[in-house]
Image: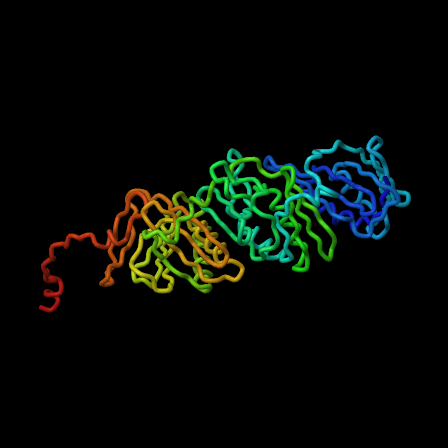
Length: 452
């Protein structure tokens, strides 16, 4: 094997492909010279391959080397002069430039199953997605990754589920059991029928897709960041692996991963139906209101990050005003936001300020459109619907003795002590408040003495 390449181009390609310095690199010579990085993070395995620009070879073959050793050798060379890389899997590779020569031993191939689809395999693989709006895909992927779990004991929640319906756009679904997002892709793209992909779980045989590991999603996100809108993203599925191919003005990159083998929760059972008679609109916020609310929520969440039971209470008392009050020993926040008028007064709901901010941004989407917040019975979750998709947010448990200000129809603010989960504000406002006995006027003796 012999490759002639610029050290500058090779270093740039290496930095984009391997996830850490202890990863294994594959250098492949042929008509197109490529470099591939292998990663093993959080029980997942993936490979990133990139074509080397300006490289050429007189033969074919491939070798595996340590990424740290190759990077150290390349940094010692002249970046403007071509470098010759040659060798075999037995003796290692020799990196030479003029009188400077480095010998790097080869290593074993990390895993052969995770490799780029070629030839007949690529032609027969199921098409998961093909679209040209890579910036829009990356924006949706970025929001979905914020909803994944970090619990390694629940591997199925540590990834993003790529849902492929029989009709309509594909969507990215993620959850950490406290929040859940179902974000449709802005660019529908092309995809095969849902039947060629695994079912989400044994309890949901009609919902198909693939479960992408978080490290793969993060790697794909970084690859897409290097491309503008003029690129094509193609994702295929075969033999338990997903091959993502990005072709643009600055070359071709492949990211391959083995999917997570496990049952993803049947999220469709979690989403409340819009036809439920108990569901009511808590507020409808426009772009300006969402930006204002997220700004205050982020500040409150940062101020109370180290405190326990940091939460905000939401309620709507006059049908067109959403009240948001932060409750915590380390800080406080009170905010009123104008909303589209909605029918009736609704429940006092306690939620995490950080979660609420993330959910509002995800539901508003790239266009930052109007978001509708819905609530229901006592233990029902909040649902946020907007142009960006659907988000489900579970309420927090209210510790005994939590006080919530309730404004009745006459405009009088009354403190109410809540316990357990959120209760309906209608019930609280209808409670009879015992009137205190009137206190008789007591003459001010000091004032009388002064006047005398």
